[in-house]
Length: 150
Image (cartoon, rainbow, N blue to C red; front, top):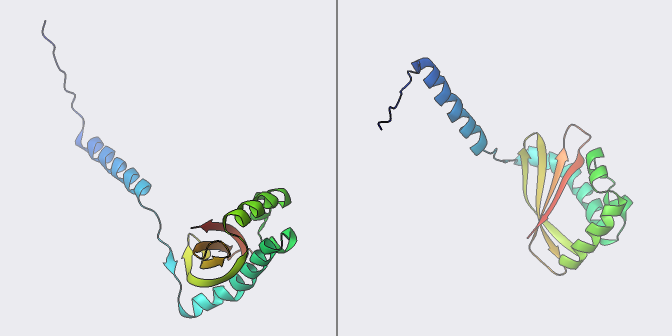
């Protein structure tokens, strides 16, 4: 028994469109935006509000004080880390890192419409904690994200 293979003629325009669409999808999926470092006046303008807000956040964390910790949160952060989940966060961070001692600004960045203050934090149990605090410039510079990593 002989098997016949059939070849279908695809118009070149369709083939070119199909390949271009596939390449654009692959490019969109593989490329990630890169944070843009802020320097000079732009950096200082962000630090004017990021430093006091980060002070409140870390003071509240050290003192197990949710109102101080969340004082500068936007509405989404207030919903994400409410008083109940703050208790869990507090226990996790104190067990893992201990109390906050000090921090150094590593970078201030613009990223996807937000500003990010990146700190190297010193805690009692770990002197190399990276603290990323995200600010929304469209919502009175409120904290829109918070990340701790080692």
